[in-house]
Image (tube, rainbow, N blue to C red; front, side, top):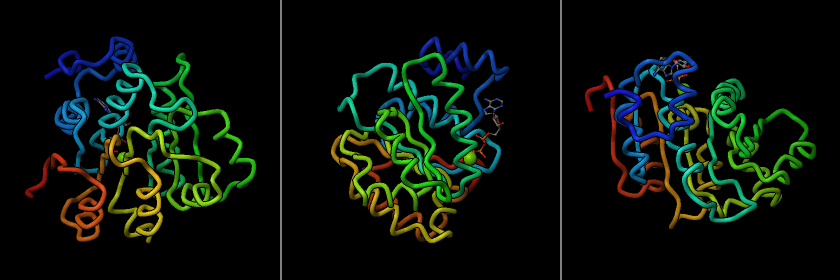
Length: 214
Ligand code: ADP
Ligand code: MG
């Protein structure tokens, strides 16, 4: 299976080609069709296997193809465990949004809270955030997740190991369940807290484990 066979928008295919990526990685081949079918996903594959585009490509596809539920709320929220990892996701996301009308916001702990609150007023389509800081903005009602279409937890095992369970629960409680698609990525699915939080946040998820005996 090639990128051309995944049913992705031509704009996205040309960005991929421009970046010099010839073939989808295994996790991209397996995850992208599941996400494009609108299903929840619980996925694992090792570091460096291309998980970021496995969720960013179908998320961008969804945004390009459908009307938003709300004109002001973010449509896609991506949570990552650390500032550094969130920045890396944001970098790949900017490659996909540049030249479109869709804004992406990066919301990290350790930065000026009130200054940061202003980014939500620009109605970003995508928000990439660390969990603690996003939970603080939710508490202050700086952002609403009632129009959220996709919630993506990147490196869920690491977020839980870092003690972000409460913040993830809070985000889950604020986001509209009924219409929301949720994706969870983890280095391993053999992690008790990941299994627990997946049971509470995902609806009949498809499980994809690359290079790991389940
Ligand atoms: P992971 O999140 O699984 O650790 P990343 O998404 O950060 O991995 O991707 C690792 C590297 O592989 C990045 O530099 C990314 O640009 C590159 N990459 C992603 N998809 C492909 C692909 N289909 N072909 C070649 N390189 C890719
Ligand atoms: Mg990653």
